[in-house]
Length: 161
Image (tube, rainbow, N blue to C red; front, side, top):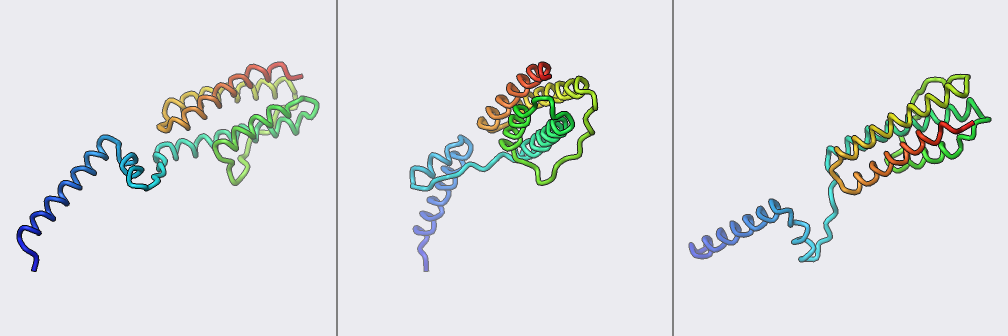
């Protein structure tokens, strides 16, 4: 039979431990405590970042499909650099399992380039907005960098002939 003193002591110790862990959780120190006792915590992705990343991946894969379709329709245009950049962006956020359907590029090269310019500018603005919405600092950096690169592509692709 457990004594009353042991029961109260165990209850007090349990309450103190729960309060300490609760305080650590509120002050965001749980990872520090885990490291101090030899546990290596791994960060869990924020659910909103996971949803954001899925949407960004779909958008970037659509842009990649558009650039590849235009490069295929107009082999005389030197779009290899833009295919490479778009592939890198899609890979950074996750390549989709299926290729999205995109509109057939215009047969007029100038019109096709204008469409790509518009698509790059739209994607750049979207990635800038996504960077503001992201929770993870690493994701913010990736999206902000991607936005800057997409703005550069929108500006530079105008000179493709």
